[in-house]
Image 1 (tube, rainbow, N blue to C red):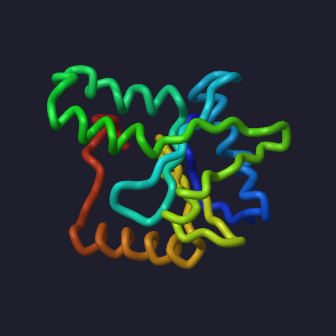
Image 2: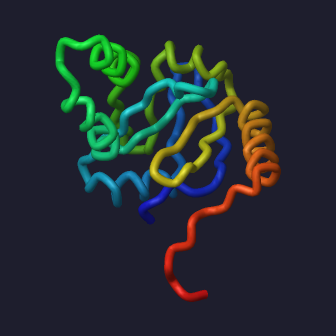
Image 3: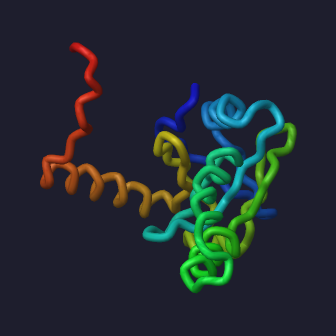
Length: 154
């Protein structure tokens, strides 16, 4: 599997550890290779944590290198991308430790929801995740948002 699919509920233990759902671990291996890591960062527009395969995160950040190193635009984007990004490695049980600043940003307590978004995933507080999915479906319906045709015959 090369995409993060589905919604998976899990528990955050007292040490701030949570187990990455098995399908997401499989996607990370497929996207990164066996030794690839995971980058966690706060989402820009939602109270949740984004999980990026290491290779995808570096691809995202690539265009930053085209900006003038000493420009305000570079500084702002670099701070937004890197300052609150945390590389994490799963232990042999597939658990990761969520940094406290990210836990606070997402308002997490015991229950957490992993929400697949294709190339990345998000970690949410369960009720907030349910609201987000409902709002996204309603906005997509109201705006009649569809995907562009792929060119393939039905």
